[in-house]
Image 1 (cartoon, rainbow, N blue to C red):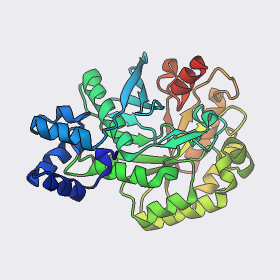
Image 2 (image 1 turned 180 degrees about the vertical axis):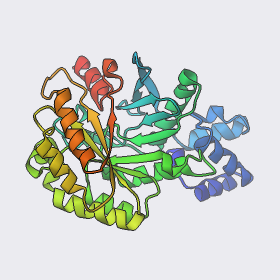
Image 3 (image 1 turned 60 degrees about the vertical axis):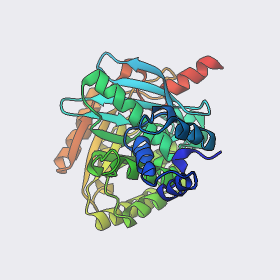
Image 4 (image 1 turned 30 degrees about the vertical axis):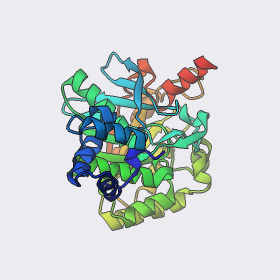
Length: 347
Ligand code: SF4
């Protein structure tokens, strides 16, 4: 049976007319689905009971649920979200002075296997459907209102998975979230973060992507980056630089580069010089991220004096640099750590 959120508005209208219902019922159902975040036909209180029962028999209604919530001392909230087939993804709510940012997942697991990432060790399981991505937002938005008294103001695609390897679903989810007839979020408050899928970056440029773009760069040295991020093999730094130049030419946007500082791996002044050279062709903002240490002890946080020297060099090149403190360390807030932990416990 088809999922109700898989069909177009036109098909829904046709279906309702075939049942002898008025066309405007489609608008009512659509509002429940894509504006009110209904989780079942039962909730659609302005539909007659027989119609709700008919819909129940005609369609499935896959809905995600929050499986577990972890609260950090710093008020970050982390969620394991269970999908209709029992698979799980993670979502994180990060409050700050004037915003609540939701970090959402785009895939169950991830095929890219970055060396510093718990999700990478799970391998790829499946893509999220756009309605599942929207569910992450809906479920966490309710939690944000309850916990902080504010709705989610910003969304970052930085959770599990590589969004540009689930391009169509991610684009449709963004369309739904920004639709003025739906949740009406501003595209400027959404950021898509990619490990550097060149084909996807060019496709975003060609569609004049209205949201922010962030690249998980983590090294501008081809050998170091390939060790950290195997995606570099098919998406070389040279080609990535060209794709980002193209993106900037097309959109005029400044690109955010995420840089996780790892002790004695990518935190030397020489590494900062390479990074500055990589960024010359386009304007960037660099987000320096502190490493969230994991029990495997594979990587370590950069020493404060190394971090300062690294940042000082970038500042001396007049680059825009922001240091992002690692949030939710006590609740394993880095990507994949919660779901991975649960999986390990179940094995
Ligand atoms: S960091 Fe992102 S791209 Fe890399 S393995 Fe983890 S989820 Fe995938």
